Image 1 (cartoon, rainbow, N blue to C red):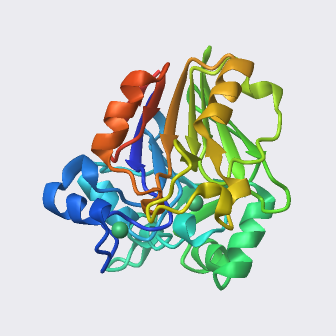
Image 2: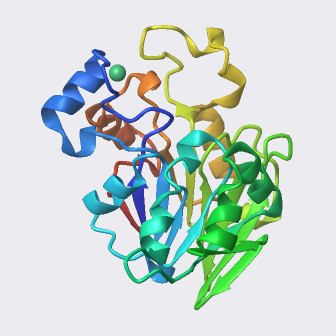
Length: 273
Ligand SMILES: [Zn+2]
Ligand SMILES: [Zn+2]
């Protein structure tokens, strides 16, 4: 199984427009892995993209992703949905007025949320422009790849993906993973790709995470290590690395040397399982 982190950033891209913080300044100077676009993952084996942040078209160009046959969206938050227009170019020929629908897969409740918050966009793309074929489902089987879509948080309808090929297993917990609801499918995964983890609890402006309004939604590294041990997960990859954590690519690449099979994603990171 071959996966690629198309974007490793969070709510705001790095460098963030107008921002003068040291992380954004460094990213402007150095570029490459110091920059982060919004959160998304590509499953190369089945040409499937998970999530479309606003700048997904730019991210796909940067990461040399030339083919998307399938799309899934994990939940309705803007940093995962607002690049949905990518389906117009993939699934519709405006000169020949021809539909070439790509497969769209999501939990039924997520489809409802996306339509409610985005002017019925899935209905428009599915029924009128017909550039996508909408499947409300909790299970996908394509070629050798088997994917379970699990609603980790029914209050917010956040999808976790358990992606399997034979005995190989990857979990993509792409946003708001806390609280992490138990599921037997998570045991013995090769990789857990998990979002919203603060390593030292100090945010970009020096504020301590414990004083921040979103403190209960963020994992600490210690908590992630407990998940790794409990579920006997071989490798952790932290993604959805927000600009507000105030840490650079250089910082994380030093930190991961001290950790036991915990790595920090960057845009273009390939994951072979
Ligand atoms: Zn900044
Ligand atoms: Zn998010």
